[in-house]
Length: 367
Image (tube, rainbow, N blue to C red):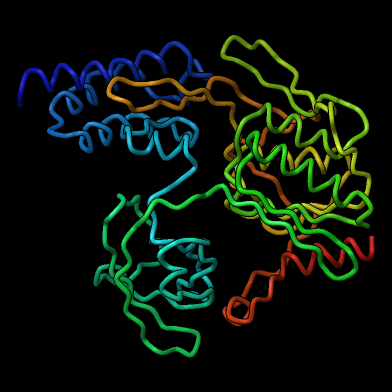
């Protein structure tokens, strides 16, 4: 191990450890002996032979907190985070009828170009059968993954897909039968705020709107302030954030330039809806503004900050806890929908049927 590498590794490690030590929202660190981690994981970081091993050591320490909002991004991941692009082959997997199935294909991805379709059964990755608790690993651009499928007619298909950086800033709008409008977005950011407001203004006479937050991982609280405000005539406190000293700060819906959309509303969520998406859904419930439809959310709801790390990486860490206006803590609990939709079957995926959307539209038509 070169002395220079070890010193550089420790500079990065110390920056992460000290930031969490001073600023993490829970001064008890969820019961973790934080000082002890400096010795155990600091030595691993110092001995790391490359960037991958270094970030593995750092994130091994952060994982002890059990907090999805606290992690270190290597320089490539930090770039992807800011550009809203990820290296991927391009499909989402779900456990359906006790098998892994393609639930959704990402537009513009290698999987879409290769003809992969929802409802295909995924048998193996790089020659290894998928186990029940399989989780898609992070990929690097240019990495080749060998997939084995059964297609929609249960015929075997083998594809070598090369991971590419694909945009995850997805926004969709559709006008459905009866004039109802479907809006989907996968990130609470300024682009979404502008898009959401514009769509609501264009469709202000629609009898109802479905907001699809399935797979939405959240975003910034300021974007959430304005997004909630689009659906109300007045501002109000929708949540409270609390720092490690107990200081409370109100989070308010902002209606400046709002569409003030007053039609009926349904919000769709699932187990991948997280953070700001969960707060949005909980607010709609508490304000009796919308029916929340689908499946219980992730329960990953804390306020986080970003800090640059030596070498181009980035640290995300939770600096404040959150409660809804009615005092609900969503972290670890999630949002339970008002109406749970039937889970999609393999036939649903293959025929393009969406039970969540059907349930939401039924509620809008028959409130």
